Length: 502
Image (cartoon, rainbow, N blue to C red; front, side, top):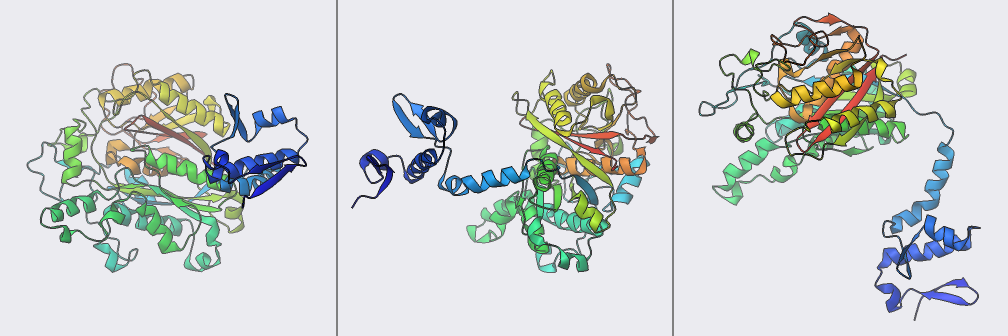
């Protein structure tokens, strides 16, 4: 028996006929819903077809493939929700907690004090024998311990990128005044975690390959789950019982900034009140070091590791690998005020673009970076004149540093108060974690009124104004708006903005 839906007194649509079955269930559902919606609207049919559910293919009128059964079910509820949102004030996002795991410490204040004093966290690699490698230096975390933050049974199973996240995430909560008692009062359905990673569980992957060479039976059942880049976010959410948005973004070294921006958007849209967000990576292992050596991207100053990372300096010869994690506790403003939280800074917004140019090289004209910065300013409602501090991506590579500098000067060159520095000069490049750790540095600069020095900037590159770059000592700066840049292999660009809370 054929199932039919009445359309008018003189016609019907048979959804079991061959003519309609070939469309698939979701298309037919969409078609029927479209006809139903038209019959209940006052829109002329031709206009309705153009504006809603149908697309013309020659003489045929077909339902739009982009719609699904779920779209149909939610169509009216979304319209109602949108009507309710109109005219409402946008929710503001503030930073109320910070957690880090870096070569310069695992406390945000200790970390930033070391930056202000120009302490380098770059040294000889000690975690494995790298004597056969041409590069033997990194921003390595020495004597790491997650005791008190991670259950002992997971200490040996989990990859370090996960352990770094668990520790930094819980430290961010403690730093934000989220006690165990307050955790019990939280609506955990409105709390989320968005921590990304560029490389994921490289150590677990490396160990699995070594085991597989002996026998497949040597592969751990945790291998595949713990390799996944999303697992850092997942285990932190499981540990806390937070049931809101939980996923990760992986865009190479731009990862953290995209995670922070998307986490803030969940709060702005009213989906959450609290988000733990940032990035994590740990790839100072043979395969990680060997891979970057093959890319010919690393500094070769093995004899003087503390002088190896030197952004914008004429003698820079590549970046230095680093490792760690950075996590920000982002919170809706009224929620933070109601619980009496300390507000370190306000998150204003950001943007992301793609160079669409090369796998590893930046676009020589900086078009993608300039577009990213301009979109970030527009999305945040910030004028170029208000940005007077930039924590740059500047990794100490010959092409990348100067291209970013030129792009920044095209955007902010008229601002005489502009100051620029690179946290990587002291901790190296933390890959997917770099943006989050540098966001912590930017927030700390806002909070303290001090910007850290550019280590090893002894002979600034030609075309670089040394008055714009922070010198060898920390400098006082009353920050109006701070911009933090992160760029990644694949041409990913991401810029985010912070400002003092007012």
